[in-house]
Image 1 (cartoon, rainbow, N blue to C red):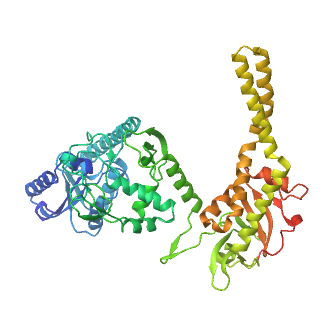
Image 2 (cartoon, helix red, strand yellow; image 1 turned 180 degrees about the horizontal axis):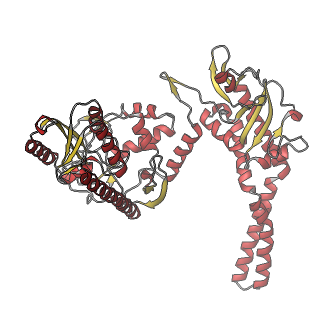
Image 3 (tube, rainbow, N blue to C red; image 1 turned 60 degrees about the horizontal axis):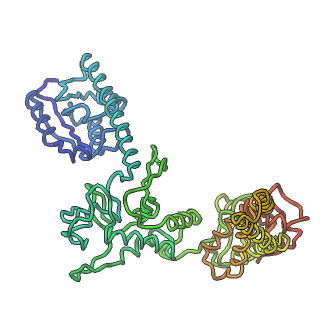
Length: 530
């Protein structure tokens, strides 16, 4: 094959940071065209990946297309300006070159003037590839250090999050700035180094949390609601709320399910900066106070996260129809086969719990029937109520609280007498010891927490039909680890650690099905629930 007959292609690339810093794709193309002209090759195409890193596992669509075209025999030689434009990871580089060699495709670098088909070219290329990998590893470590230090300093990493801006109102370049924000052109509210609350989007964040916590319990439902919301600019122009997109990738647009999920799960809005670990599923490694203002309280954020966890993966909307959340799903099991039972809607019976083993595997070994959901749920909460009343009758919390309060008042009185010099220090110490002997057993036995849970159960039982299904589910999760049913009967229950003292009192004298599981047959509860 002679040089003048070779079909050449070029490959050029810049990362997002290099685009910002002014590295030129045009300069790479000029060098590629110049080398092709010097060699007398026919340059038929230039592949371009703009704004994409060359690190390991990065996805570069044009590089993938180039490798496929090489396999299909569309060209004979690839020209790059520098090796690190092609790959910065040694294994990836060598694997790519090996593939090209198997397809009889030559590789040329303009700056390094290397032809990997020669022995010396292969050796030099390996050395340069190693240096490129060392460089990117060092760059990654330095970037990680920089991000950690910014987090320690209370500063954000990456793009400005929705709800905030730089506060440079006089020269605003925010995507949700000119034509959208009423403060554009006004004196600066910030220095550009610290995030401030965006006058429109900050309110948008609070609305999303409010919508989710107060009725719209799905990300897509919140997105649809936000897309209906409007605000009025000082000149009377009415605008729709919108997300501001991602700088350099996409502009402002409508709210989506994924965008709402990202907002509702971001602890940044509580005024904190999170430093995330490595890996695909990154977790918060450290949390630091941020220099930006909080848009929501810690209590609001924690309540929403608790609500999302309680709801689990249950879909709240299906085919634009509101779905029922089943409070016992996740804690109810078939006592016959051990499979979990899940809430479902049956045309003939309405809301039911069905054995998932029979549904998914057509389990012929278990004849568990579906159980009507509402009667069973009422039966379970009634059982919790009876347990809490039995515990209060046995523990006599009103008497205990009065005794503890009287002891605390007597100690306070003794301290006042000691300050006035009417009693000695020895008498005061004896009084402290007496009060501690009263209070400490209550603390060790979590008496206050148990009493609080008991009152919560009794209040929920009294207002059960008025509670939302998510509130019902949250209460049942506080009290129950698992319940087991057979036919239409509740046959065993495993309480949570917090609720165990109440059940221990209630089920005194009953047989047990394990250290924490309690059979219910001796209480007459194993009758049909529906």
